[in-house]
Image 1: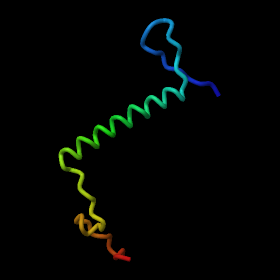
Image 2 (image 1 turned 30 degrees about the vertical axis):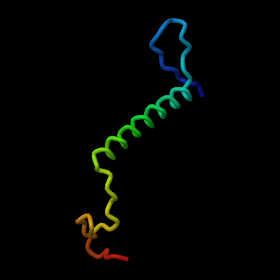
Image 3 (image 1 turned 135 degrees about the horizontal axis):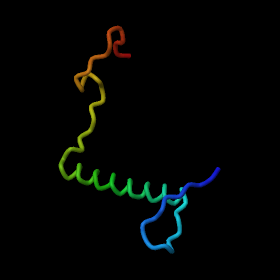
Amino acid sequence: MSEETVPQQGGADAQPKGLLQQMEELMAALNADLSALDADLQAAGTNRPAPSAPEERGVEPPEGLGRI
């Protein structure tokens, strides 16, 4: 199985990145974005606990599937 590389932006001396390194960098960027989004949502006061039962969300169970 071969490892694909994506060309880097930069000089001709730049080494191509391995797939694992690319994935680690993408995961780090995603984690940073999610942390920033979480901070924004908490600052906006939208971090409310979700209702626990479908009825509290205004959702009725399908016919014949009552509460257990």
